[in-house]
Image (cartoon, rainbow, N blue to C red; front, top):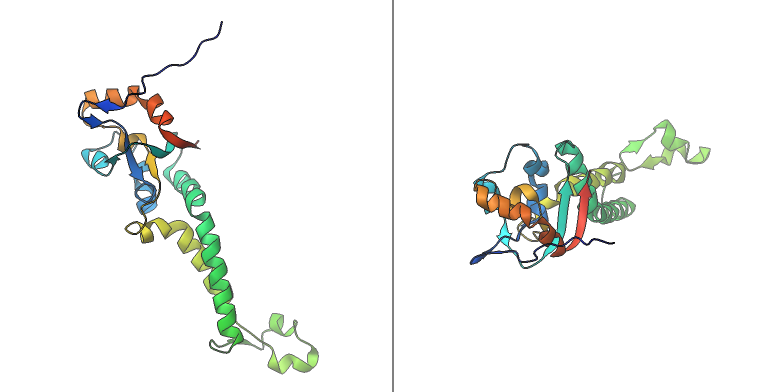
Amino acid sequence: MTSHLTFDADVSNGSCSLLRGIPTTAVLRSCAALFSDHSSGSQGSIESTEDVNALDIFLSHNWSVPRWRKFLSLALHFNLGSAIVVASFTAVLFFCLQAFDLLPLPLTGVPWVKARYAEDDHSDAETGVFVFLVTPLAFLVTLFFKHDIIHRISPGSMISLDKACIHQTQKELKQKGISKLGAFMAKSSSMLILY
């Protein structure tokens, strides 16, 4: 005998929908501040969401995992590709600026720089530091702050996050939202699990 999980796929609540989403950039803003408080959400949490017909991502997480781990995981998931592109572009740009003498090559006479040159060329041994200094900085800024920079231009995918998308201050709406979690998952294109 097999049993099947069934759920009511209707996500309406009278004239409004229980299906709400929050943009990716809002979840990541301020180092994932939505994950900072283990207590119930506030009216402000639900007001930062919007009614949607479908979700891009259903986000499942464990409240016992520290906020910084969730933020790091989400930043890597959503921002790593952009960080690699920005860092690569930055490295090429600064390499070209140094190669065409538009930026100085400030390190001269340093032993590890001289070691890369033939002995006759030690007096010309110069190297630039801008690629080494600016590229990691561009990578880290993009990885950890891209969502803060672009939130008005591109809010990102719509996510279902329990604390923000299920009403927390009205018990009846909260219970209805919890009972519809299966329907919320069914209306999502993908699921992201943070544990």
